[in-house]
Length: 195
Image 1 (cartoon, rainbow, N blue to C red):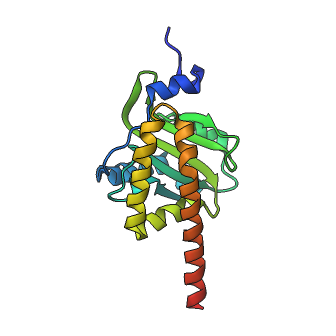
Image 2: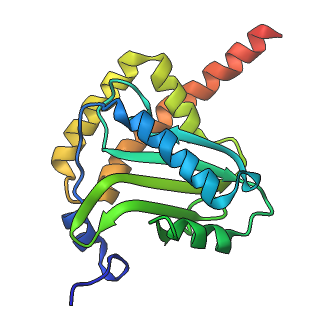
Image 3: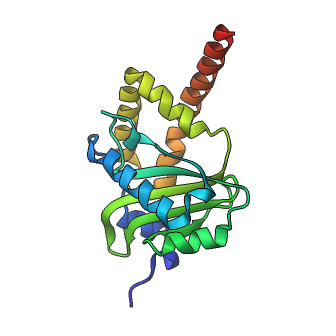
């Protein structure tokens, strides 16, 4: 009998789900909007502070893993057990993320023991806050030359870490931290100049 995804080691999962980098696909925006609507209907808009499409699939012309990242910010009083159960009812797999900010929940869709099926989604569930991922996205949108540089880095790292997601993610972190810091400084400077 084949193992379920939850029974597999990281190494086994990385073989089934290698790092894939593709040219930007305009359908990703439409897929996000459709999934956003489905999530709103499933968990109720009363539980949602805001929802954002972020990551490389949200930046036009940026090379990307074909996975749509969604930042789902929920109200403090959301029943997270019910939220997970409701999301599982529409095909999501729950993966606890103890190192991530509370409520430490990530949900994935499009993964099967035989590989990717359809559009892959990662929903990162957090309480409302000031999240670096959105600063990084906005900076790339405003600075296409930086997005091109990031795409080249991702292609280089994909060759080295095709079957090592942690290695791939870790190798991008210095670039992401540097750009996020620039984005925050730029926003602060722009806000101070408006005063």
